[in-house]
Length: 174
Image (tube, rainbow, N blue to C red):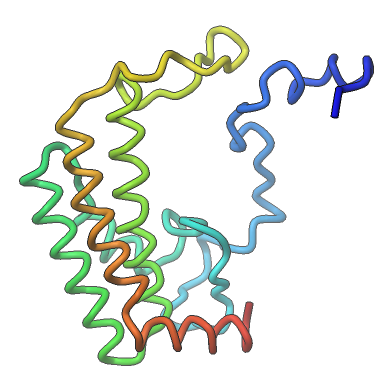
C-alpha cells in the first residue's frame, strides 16, 4: 500500500527504523524502579522481549553484574551463571526472578548481535536524525558471544516448569 503525501512527512515515513526509545513514556511503562519486585511480585508483568529487565529490583542488582558478552569466553561464563540463577529461581518458585534471568539471556543475545552487526553497537546515527548506520561493521567475536547466549536463552525459554509458570503468571497477572 502506497503512503499518502501526508504520511511522507512523518518521521516514521522518513526513517521507519527510528529507535523506539525516542518516544519512551516512563509514566506509561508498566515496570517501575521504585518497586521491590521480590516483595511485590504481583506487580510484575511479563511483557514482550526484554522489557523491564534493567529496572526490576532487586533482580537487576543480582543478575545484572553477571551479564557480560565481550568475547565468547566471557559470554560463556556469563550465560552459564545467569542460567544457573534461572534454575535457582525456578527451584524456589520465584517466577519473577526466573523470567528476568531469561530476559538477561535474551538481552545477551540481542546486544551481542547488535555489536556483531554495528561497530560500537550503535545502530542509529544521532547526529543525522537517527538514520540507521551501516550494517556489517561489527566484531565477529560478538557473533560468537551471541550464539552462546542464544543457546542458553532458548534452553531457559523451553524449560517445562518455566513454560507452565509463565503461562499461569500471564493468566493471573499479565
